Image (tube, rainbow, N blue to C red):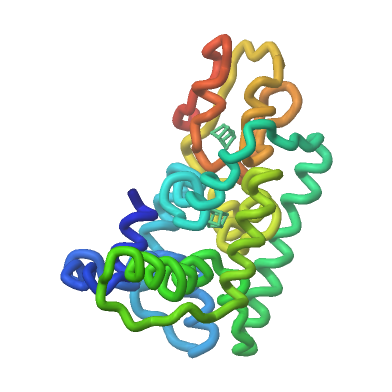
Length: 250
Ligand code: SF4
Ligand code: SF4
């Protein structure tokens, strides 16, 4: 639904939604976008309220944006569903590869401070917006005859997008786990999330750790909260119904 909304509000025929859903709703709900613009302009970016709401919700639920809203995450999941057998890494490998995105976030912010533009190759919402505007909408307009005068262009975001999807067929959510700076920001904030996954009496059968698209479940059944995108696969896949999400005991 959010992917469709993202495409629709970027389409000319979605313009009447401008009052209800400002066209930049998704982009301005990204704290990464707001921080980047604010650092570049040395002034608080407009639309910061959306980003604050998303961050507050992340402090309550965790990386809900990555699991339920992000249009790039949705496309990545679609690509990942093409291949049923998933590549599973060891605990140690998962920890090592997932820490890469935090360094990339740091580099992204340093570059933003010096006004070096990297959003088109690193920010998932910017990449996705360019792909939608310059590829998906023109193709839809050709197929269904909308009046739309954008042409297919901007090859680099499209190539990155295709690369992300191509890798995701073989290693689910690799971009989200290893590279995404926005995901890294949400991961940092979600360490404080109130909602958490518990699996009392887990027999460590590893069904859920094999199913987890984020490699978030550790040996023994515990998990890394900052990597979980609340997809709920582990809840539904547990053969013994031991997994649930609950509010942290105070
Ligand atoms: S990690 Fe990045 S691309 Fe993946 S769902 Fe989260 S914000 Fe979107
Ligand atoms: S399978 Fe479970 S631990 Fe893994 S991302 Fe989904 S909800 Fe989180």
